[in-house]
Length: 193
Image 1 (spheres, one colour):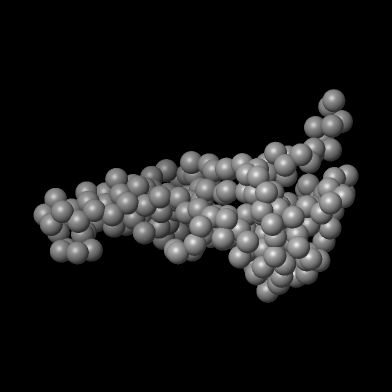
Image 2: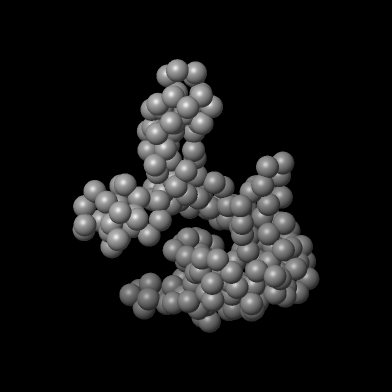
């Protein structure tokens, strides 16, 4: 069992339970330069450089653009994820920024793909990241220009009032953080006063 885990996970048996995926699988077992085949210097998880040919490669977190669609009454539209991480749980539309598009264009594209609506972006809600994750989430306020419905990546789309938000069923820590930063209070926080 331990031999199938990445080298860093094999360092100690107590580490095994907490390792679910590598921060950078591309560098996990890299030792040679992909250009010339010489021994490379690996600074896991950030970079690989070759003293022989000068090749250098750097890895950074990937930007994810998101939009929180709110209607004029202040209700928020969320989607239940049908695929990938967080499947079956609630979040707002978002996805990776593709080459050739801005963060704002990506947020609008993701709303079209996941909720089949155009949105008018408002202000920046926040930027969310953790050192042990491979993404940086950029979240905008948004006004839906139409009535959202489920796209291919969503099994359901629903409108929620502030008191009806499904806090225990949110897909990610960043979903909860952005909703709080957008003005929605978690019921436990309001009960404490």
